[in-house]
Length: 182
Picture 1 (tube, rainbow, N blue to C red):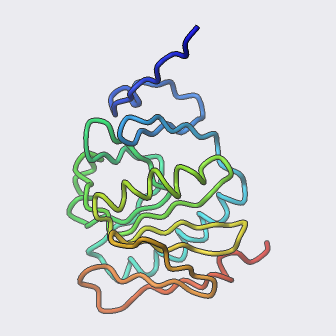
Picture 2: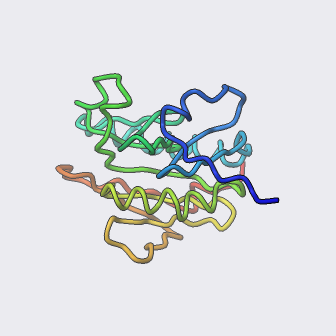
């Protein structure tokens, strides 16, 4: 008795899956399924969003979105980054299909997402040349900063910075503040 062959998932197949509380994504046909995130994940995500918003208010060329979203670079790719920043002209289309130039992508790790975020999705974001990909590890209290050409991430334990194309000043995030107790 053989094993069933895995199904190669397209973005359209993923969009047709039931709305059952799970997050469904596909990267080059591989289905990624994750349950609802932990409360600590959501707290860290909210803190990141709150930190980025004032910076982006001063830099109106960019707009911040959060999951759920349908970001795709092909028929077998559909991802939902926790947070991502796109050019304002793409944001104003209100069309996920036209938001393809992500300047910053942030994924906050959970036990169920670590492998996909660190390997599958990281390679995808590097392939499509996302200039900055942050993997936020709330348990280790650090931020991995990936760029398209990086073989290894820069590790931020005190602060991380992000300078979108054309911006005169960088955004700086205090890593200890991000992980402060309630």
